[in-house]
Image 1: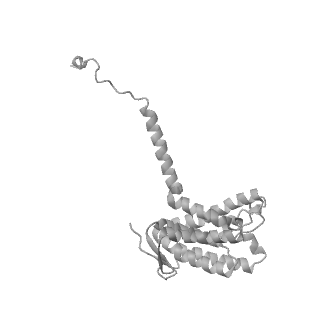
Image 2: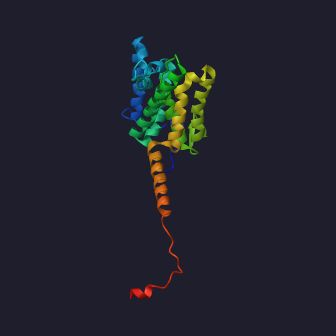
Image 3: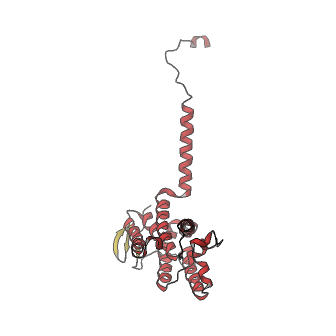
Length: 238
C-alpha cells in the first residue's frame, strides 16, 4: 500500500488528535520537563546518569529520562516532533507499535548508554526527549523509503528525510563530542535495525525459518534415492 505524501514544517502532517499515543508522548515530555525544572535539584534524578544507574541503583532513569528536556527549544521542538512525526507513524503503525518503538527504543538506548557509560566512567547526564524525537523522525523516514514526503515545503524522499534527522545528531556530535550524543547515536542504530528488518518479530520468524531449513536439510541427508534398475520383483505382488 502506497503511503500518502506528508510534510514536516508545512502543516500537512497527519495529526492523530490529542487522544492519540503520539499526543500522550508529547504531553508526557512537556509535563515531565516542567516538573524536572520546577523540582530542581531533585529533578536531576530523573535524567540519565550512566554512572549511577547500576552502581547507584537508580534503575528508573532509563525510563524517566525519555520525558525530560531541560531547554525551552528542546521541550518545544521535541514535543512538536513527537506529535507531528509520531502522529504520522501512529497512523501507519498503530498506537502500540509506536509506543514500543519510540519509547521502548529510547529506554533501550538509555540502558545501552548506562552500560557503555559505566565502562567508560562517564560523568555526565543525558536528557531523552530528543532521543524519542530522533527515533520517531528517522523511523518515519526509513519506513517511507523511496516514497515522497517534504521537509519545510521541499520535496524529499523518506530516506533523505531520515538522513536529515540523523544529520542533526551528527552535527551536534561534531560540535560537542560524540559522547554528548551517545543516546541519540544509539537511537539511530535502533531505528535503522528495526525498520530495515531487525524487529524482534521478524528476527524470530527468520530464526524459525533458518531452523526449519536446517531440520529439512538434516533429514534429507538420510534419504536414499531408489535405483530405477533394481530387479523386476513387482510380478511377485500379484
